[in-house]
Amino acid sequence: MLKKSVRKVIFDGFSLVPRSTGRKRLISISRKQKKTYYPLIRKARQAARSKRKIIIGTVPDFSWQGEGVRVDEVLANSPAQQAQLQPGDILIRLAGQPITSLKSYADLLRALKAGEKIELQFRREQDLKTVDIVPVER
Image 1 (cartoon, rainbow, N blue to C red):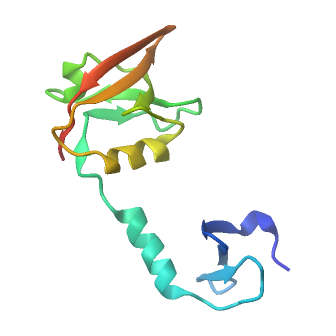
Image 2 (tube, rainbow, N blue to C red):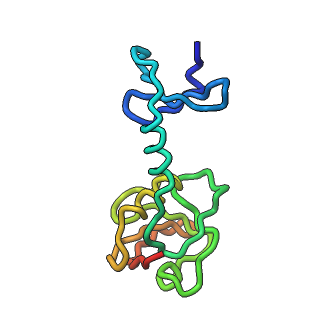
Image 3 (cartoon, one colour):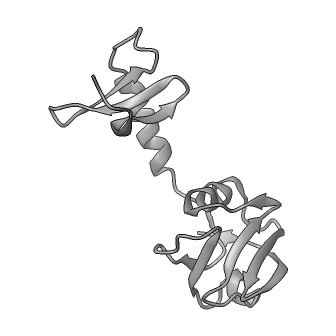
């Protein structure tokens, strides 16, 4: 019997389970269907590879474990630099949506369009600041 710790739910009602052969198998959580769904696995991989079309000019701190996304670097001549973001700022909300992790940040960036003015809320030390920022094409 498989332990729940090795399962990763990727679609409603389905889990991606490692097999002893090194390949992964997508199975129904209800265990009624133990069929491998390779087209769904392929679709999940393609969705993960979909690239963002815009940037705001921040490089995230990948070691940050707190809430939001901490800025590690601000790219020169970027919307983030024009908005006066600094390394160490913690991005809290983008376009009215909360930023809870790097994944949520990337998902929000994928949903936005270049040239749209959006509101970015961030924390610098103890101060909460809000700026308008216009993302550019990648």
